[in-house]
Image (cartoon, rainbow, N blue to C red; front, side):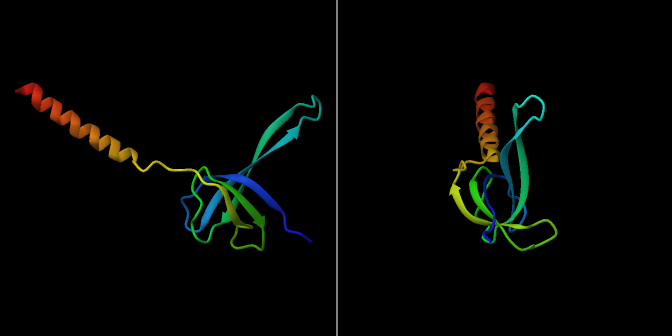
Length: 107
């Protein structure tokens, strides 16, 4: 029997060797027959800590690795580029340039 595979987006990557992957699917309303988008979250084992938030990944069902982990990362389909400048760097640069402007206005 083949193992189940899903494609989803990484929602959280804070934990060591684990990521939370959201898989979106449609559920039809029983009465109105309108499709609603649902999101299932899976805790996935990522041995190399390769996946980051926003990446599209392929996951596969497997043996239980921990209390909640039953899926493992097979491959990263689309890698999201993360900005090299961190928000803290932007704030510190603004503080430095703001300090320079205030000193010039005093002279």
